[in-house]
Length: 120
Image 1 (tube, rainbow, N blue to C red):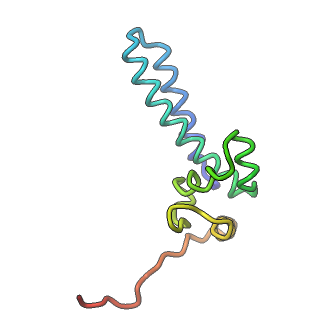
Image 2 (image 1 turned 120 degrees about the vertical axis):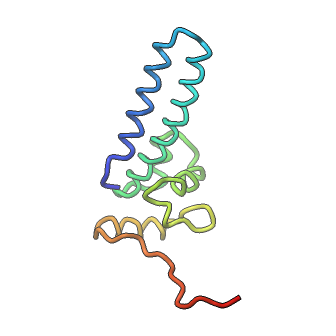
Image 3 (image 1 turned 90 degrees about the horizontal axis):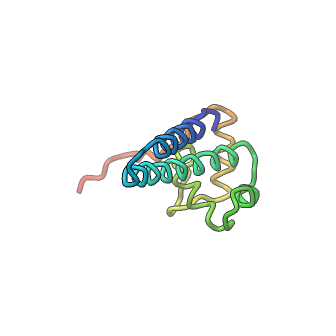
């Protein structure tokens, strides 16, 4: 991923945390922190996808993030740049290789297009 989507997500999460810190009402702080938690999860997911596209292995990304290696593929599958490469709700090493190639060449991911429409 060559764009800074993950950085934008991280900035949004940080701004939400700052709003929580400034909130005087604890209920409002809880709401802000809940929003920040979702934003941080999204930012982590997008940053993990960027790291994998830049050449890091899924195992290395898991090590850096401090999570189990088998939890990385489903998270990557929910990321924006790797979503087109998902198969059965997860992403494989072969899918990542295709995504890296497409990112390096600037090609958009291939999409299935039926050759003809079947009349039902």
